[in-house]
Image (cartoon, rainbow, N blue to C red):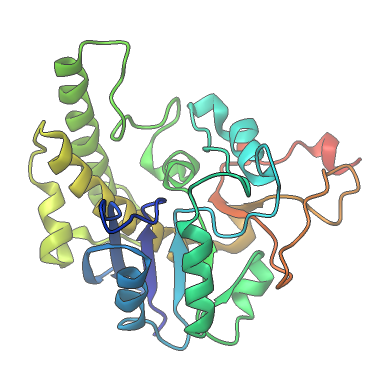
Length: 285
């Protein structure tokens, strides 16, 4: 059986004085059952957790920048997130070789040492000879999967809405979180995501609190579950319902963004509605 691991990676590496933020971790079976879940701090602890769960066909979805080759500016995959999902108020934070958020690259190095490969296309994912990792972004999953019903805008379950007073923002954020968990449990998802099958993820259905650190703790675990489910969704539906954002070597109109020294391309794997895909006109050159 193929297992799917979701990693909502804290982008900062942390230090002796200030430990890294929590990373939410979830492992899911092919039928949507959550086999394990938890949190870890720092890349070493995250790798140790993954090592305890990885198998021959495990697919690991990571919410972090894994392959970064651009010296400055923004990666093409991140630019395409804004171009194709911006209508739903979804955009990606820019990363380059000068940014401080390097935990993703460090994690990929450690996973490579562990025998986990990297896949940047549906064909590579299907043909993987062993466990493999890829980069994903939960917001694109939430607005790209039509069954969840976020037809107009992403759910505001993360950052506070600064347009309203903070107490109002916290209440709205909590309500958005609870509504998202409700939809994940009731929408006709294929494959399903059975949050209630593990005590830690089942607790996400309890009413949210307004306390910021507690909310973040819960949010990290939920995003870990979304990353694991994105991996399962990709394997189930392939290119039919998922697009891989980033430079396309088959399209000469795409900007040049070189692979890294290991030949890996910087991409983000995103579930997509038809209207979120590359316009046909651009495909025609």
